[in-house]
Length: 181
Image (tube, rainbow, N blue to C red; front, top):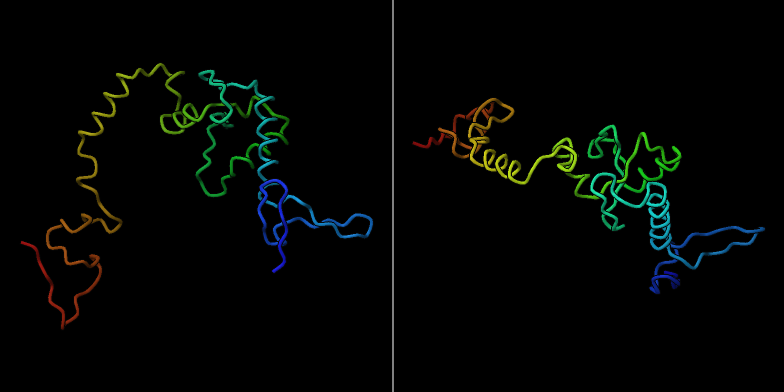
């Protein structure tokens, strides 16, 4: 295995992790590994994003670059099939010319609150006391006690007469059905 030294991370890595380029018929191998090159490209892209959107959260004003993320204004979910990685979303926004009608710069807290609550508490006016009351109400509710599985029966070992089989599974003649009394 042939190795090469990356000039950025100063680690010796397999030569396959370095980009090959042909210039005027000659083959050149870059001195920067693909991981370091990708990290540099993502950092440059994030700097362009921060500069294009004013450098602070559009909701609360947080300005620390480590906390800033890009968000679709239309509430497009990123966790669904076909979702884009963060840097891919930033590339899409760059291709769209940093369109401020489609995207906004939010801190991670405002972005997560928007995803989980529908709107950030900074914008909705939800107070700490109101959110704590909502959490207490949800914690004291009986959600999950009557949980039904896909077969329509109660799920788990606590089900009366549960023997480890699904409701549509048959008991063979040489097996005995165990019942919990």
